Length: 499
Image (tube, rainbow, N blue to C red; front, side):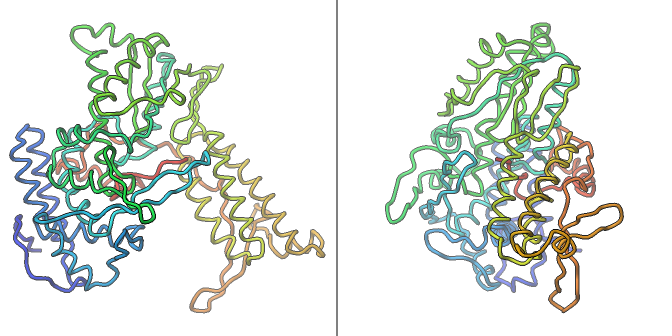
């Protein structure tokens, strides 16, 4: 197949459905590989030239529009109430992605609930601004992946929460380190210093400044943005990663593993594991973490306009255990290190299940199963890499009791045997399997069954190589192999964090 030469030249619009997406992706991938090479060589003028070439290329604009029109938020408009929902609009949108004269619109402020009952502010850009951010992200992400901390796993392509948890196991598999500093940054996305971003982020400064200062509309009232990156922007997670990258190297300078001072560095057993703005730092003693590591963290964050949350930052002994990314990590009295689903994560999951059952108290069984199965499948798959078999069994029991009460309330005048025959049957050795008979769209009769968490096999996760770069041609085959084995290279850079 012929691939168009790399460059910024743009052809006239062609029908959206006839675009050669493989050729466009190949062109962008080649440019990104050149950006990685120039970044490693420290040729920053070359990086800047290649980024400009990519952001002005037709292929880059095509992929940017494709991303924002096929994501989960494709039908969510910004303040202009506009969406690109037809092939004609998408084709025309490609030509609207111009940096000359570009002025982003204010964000539309909405709030989403948090697990602690509070609300998290979310800024929704217009779809054109989202596409512009996606375009510049294509040029910025290869730099972020090349210069990022080795043990940073959040919002990065080819990395996930499972990688971060597996790295925790690697750090704690021996008796030492036995202490951990649980770090929590207060309002990370809301308080990042704009001047620091403009000085250090290797992208078009004028466009970046416009995004940072675009403000937001809450109702009809306009608010300025003097700090932070908007939660909801396509490029915001990568900007946050760039802000926090360098922390691992700063710790290595204080606690070197080789050369002068390596004896002290090895004895301190300091390791960083970070997922976006959630991180832990291991240490051989409480004194090392409180007197040396914590002041370093505070100084590092202060340079970027950030501070540690005094309420949520704590130093804990591994025998007490700590929660990280929905998992509880603890060394038990018998010396075994076990990682299990955290109690908070289990409560949040069961609360969601109860709410689904409550909302569907009068709905057919097929509707209830259709809503429960994706939730159960997603939660079980997230925890399938840890010690979760007993937890899965307990969760299945709780869900069974919820379903049984749901069925009995629907038929208060029927006996238990009748209810059992109506909603539960036996399949092989498994009895009391909740089912519903329904029809497909073409009229075929099918029997839906409720998924069980215990049906999810427990499998050890293979952690991604810390030096691997998805934009480096030398690692293409490695990430392709991981994708085939069930560790997908996500286009948005990672899976959502559990609450």
